[in-house]
Image 1 (spheres, rainbow, N blue to C red):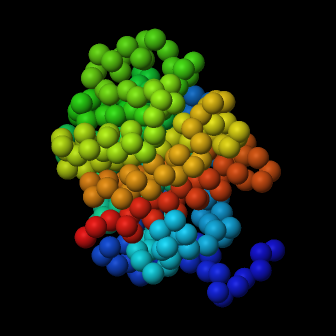
Image 2 (cartoon, one colour; image 1 turned 60 degrees about the horizontal axis):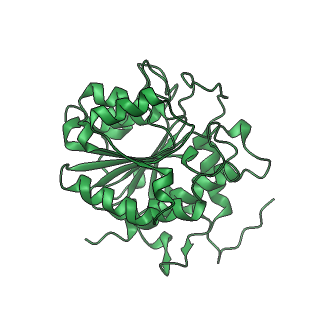
Amino acid sequence: MINDDPTWPRATSLLVSPSESRVDDVGLLGGHTYRTSVTPRSSLSTPRAVREALRYYSTWNYADELDLVAGAKLVDYGDVVDADADDSDWSSLRHSHPLWILLGGDNALTWRALSVLAGSNLSEWGLLTLDAHHDLRDGRSNGSPVRQLLDAGLDPAHVVQVGIADFANSSYYADRARRSGIRVITRGTLSEGSLENVVASALAELSSKVRHIYVDVDLDVMDRTVVPGCPAAVPGGLSVVDVRRAVRLAANHHLVSAVDFTEVDVERDAPDGRTVRTVALLLLEALSGYQRRTP
């Protein structure tokens, strides 16, 4: 049991219903995709667990001297029912918000959400991934969303992949990324500099080419010790601190129209729920970055 303190508002207070939506609020939608994962996983809803984990956090951002409760809220549209189905209803994304935050599910969510958001204008979008994998596999799975988006019309010159890891990809898919023209920034390269600087550079590059940017944050880009609920995470990944800063920076960019958080299996999480709590914290960092946008 958690004691309530009216002078310590919980982050759950940032969630509002669509009927309470204001023009500058952020849209929030869950899509627990899992059926086509190359790593078998449970059907337990990650989005639901993330919303519940918000109760462990307050609304006060010390770094920015900012109380999130005073700014844009999270308009919660709930979860897509059977998000893997071809006839699943993603129509909530038709509502107009300056920023959408999507909660997965596995990485199949990225293909489905960006396809709906972009519609027939996919060529006007850029994709920035924080991910250990290229996601260029053949077929339809959580390992194929980037390839599916390229097939649908996303320009490979509009794709930047950050955090691609050793021993997590094959030479075949590395060559596919190279031949397609995707810009790849490996985990080894990140060890030589700041993740924030790399993300800032990627956003600047994309903003010169596109009208909207979609940011995919796959939790397996992080170190496995901090995200045990991410099936494909490996030792030696990025730190929570670095990814938090990168997410806040990305959400602050005026062309970033959507950020997703994917690849969490609640059933595999540690008893202390550290993976789900990490996603909830990243969600708050995204809202912090958005609230700091210059009008």
